[in-house]
Length: 75
Picture 1 (tube, rainbow, N blue to C red):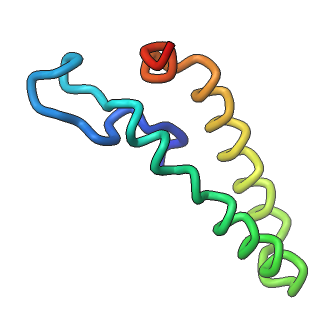
Picture 2: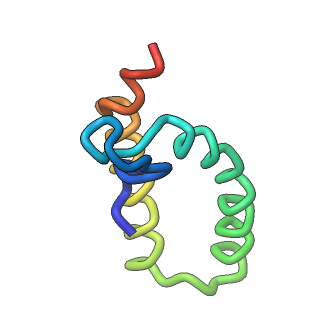
């Protein structure tokens, strides 16, 4: 999965067929998944490459959140 929500909640013929901020809002429960990742990491079920990949994905997602036109449309 790409670390963005550029096409989340797309409504045809709106905003050039790109996503709406509602998709970002619906990602609010992501912290549940992060709790699961911590448990899996503690259990030793993720190797270093997988852990680094997850951290990169979240870093890229944060970058996308800070620069996204979808987020800018919220303000």
